[in-house]
Image (cartoon, rainbow, N blue to C red; front, side, top):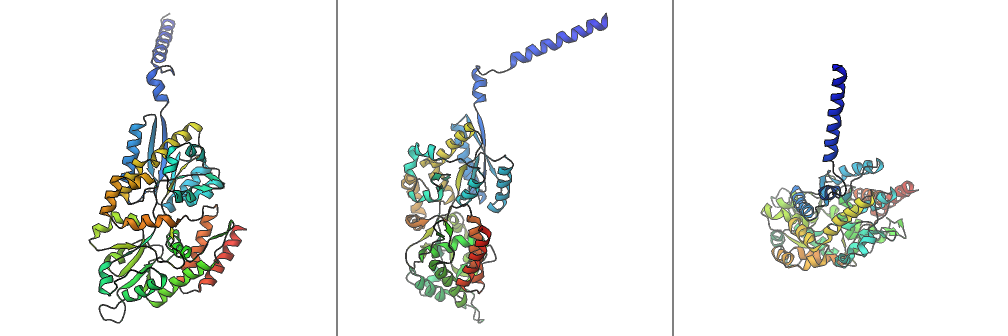
Length: 429
């Protein structure tokens, strides 16, 4: 009897607990739980560098989260571009992508081939912010009549130079043409210690076959009238490409240009130390160059046939997940397009705003007054080009990089391009 009584007591105890638990459960009609159920947590993968720029971005993400209680974005740094790519592709193939991806727009074609991204034109066409975007940016956003991403910021390359070294060499006018560029580089190449070898060179050029080398070389190809695509097919052996490679080759052979360490063309140690007087780089360096305590200024990329610049910066993609998550991701992308975000991102990082109202804002105009070198990059936006947004861009870039590297190491420009075109044809076919 005692055992039976104890079993009944346990049943009653468990039943009471279940009732209590049920009474504590939240239901869709309850105001608190209903609000909680509506919160969508999104992940955003990025590779923002240097670390201070990450801090700027995180503060902007935090502001979005505070003003959008039902959408919470978690910003995750997942490494540099070369480290990110394998993670991105693995996540996509494994059906575990982030909700939002920050990456170079040149990845668009590959993501599209994998069916990993959602087009955003339906949202963008209904947004009043569409008209605020710099029109040149759409070349990096569109592929096959669809819009696949929105830019978070942009930049282009200029020629940074040391005014004191120009003055010491007796140079009073900045070079505007390729021939003037070569002459100035020769004048700036000097043996200052008298040991029979130059210890100061005119310019440092990027050695390697990576994207940085291609990025810094392309403005010269476009200025010479070159195009990387003929129809929708890669066209490496073109007049502009041959001319641009010949220019770089001549400057190296003349001794007025030195080569960077392989795949390290973005490093500015030689420029800061005065071992070179010119270097191709962008406005993101304005965040730390003043701290180096050196004199510097910026001039546009020299011209052969027409002014040219190549668009830098990264875009944001909405990854294919679920409709509610994709809609929430678009809310964040729309926030990125706003004048407020673009102004704060530009002020904190040196990137150029893609929002035209942000460029005209009082805060940004005051920033330009403090950093007048930005005027060069803003002026160049008028003729800035995107790199090709095609599925095979990575293969095209690798082949082009190989031709640039071969030429800088002594090869003939046309032959190097022909060899790369043959290799590319084999890969694509």
